Image 1 (cartoon, rainbow, N blue to C red):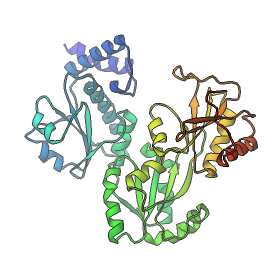
Image 2: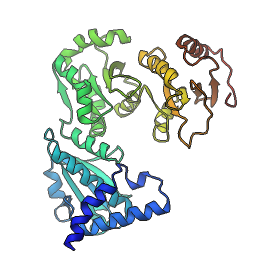
Image 3: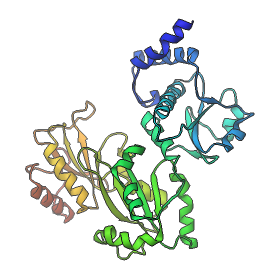
Image 4: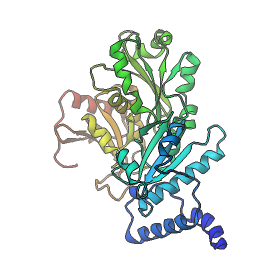
Length: 393
């Protein structure tokens, strides 16, 4: 038995290194059997370092936790086993990283303690909930190792950080900070007169952002200075408007950059505002990102092609996206090299505008390496001079 224990841990970790939980993959039957048998062996012989909770100590222990998470699971359920393994890898990573504290990672078996799971309204397995200063929060990201680790890093920051210096703002928006917390973007809110009742009610929804977005509040004394530096050229009317600075890391097409956006007080909640402004200004369109782009209803300017075919048009569209010349569009790219993409492409890629409202496609027939022609074509669409094509051309 001891030999089996010694062999199981490194061998399984060596063979199985993917970072995506079972519930997010479309495996065939053979892969599912292998994954189940692998997790069954680990469950039997691997002593879990996760804190196992019961109904007797659940409330008391959670109330003392500053930052961490809890996994609600069923022992025999495949997805639960996979996420437990993800958390073991996360825990190992934190033990190796001296910049962050090792977080609390708890687990509660809903078969053994169904009353606790009923009280927490656990409806599916596995379910992850966050813990911040003794309070339980919803987990809103994917169950990959990267997102779990990034979220646990964010929880170690103040719930609402107040930045009071120019250097603090620049450090917060830097690519180094994004890399450190494994975030694609972060946001600083400039919200004058925070003490007023109207703004106070709006800020009450910030709790839903904790662990999901990396954000901070700027001290009111910085509003005018940073408005002069970043806000005025974005068309903000005056420095007393609520506005935000959004930093986004390099993604292969667009380098790290900072942009300013206006907060519309009558446009829903802060949560929906964050969801909109953190949409990539030039990102990949796939099954995971499609709902994010369709939610806004904006037309999509899309480049289709393999990695090599889309080099020239993708560079052009990325420049147009970052210039904010056409804020009424989402700029995206679609990898036609994937087997699930059935649109034919050609050398130089293809460019199309998809009107989500009218469900129409407007194909670009010119040279995809000429920026001025693509600009003119987009302008013609804006002016209503283009006719849609029912099928691809």
